[in-house]
Image (cartoon, rainbow, N blue to C red):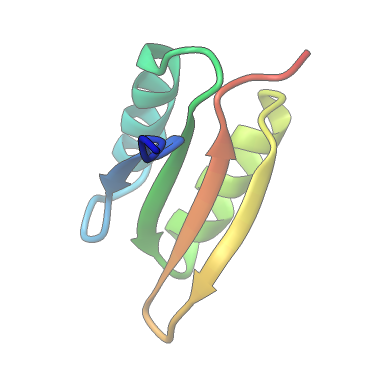
Length: 81
């Protein structure tokens, strides 16, 4: 039986300042094939607030996968209906 490929791409934005992290995240999402999601690692604080709120306002579904002291991982759906 053939194993299925990952259903998400990964993007590490830790250390990337606002608003560049949001712009890079949006560009990566726009380039994703239909049906794929994006796993994003980013710093806590302002990047966390800005990226999550911006993506939600743009209509993306955002799920927090991991919360560490200084960073977190998000899973972002590649687009809504």
